Length: 124
Image 1 (tube, helix red, strand yellow):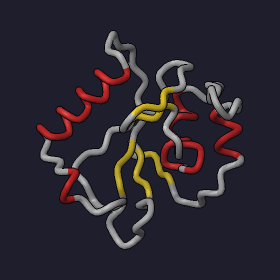
Image 2 (cartoon, rainbow, N blue to C red):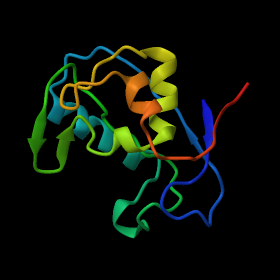
Image 3 (spheres, rainbow, N blue to C red):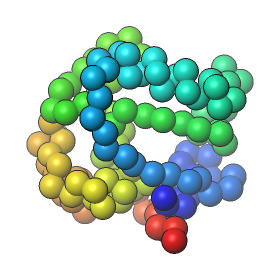
């Protein structure tokens, strides 16, 4: 778990972020639907939410194996992950040599070329 500076709107409390890797039998669309269900059950209301504002939960699919998916409401790999330290730092902890299937660079390489100066602090 990491405490990170807010992205976009800096005038808010720090965020808590983490990255997990999992195996699933769900298709990418089924996984996205399941994530949306969990977010709703936890009280997230996307329509009322300010872009980059505080939220109770926000789950993104960063990768789905080496697949590239561009579909309505679903783009994998996540199109902004290489620009965000709060994603790259936790990813480096679990899979630094993972290669981005589009950019053809490892997570380590993406981080060291990232312009995001945000603090990303691992919590105890």
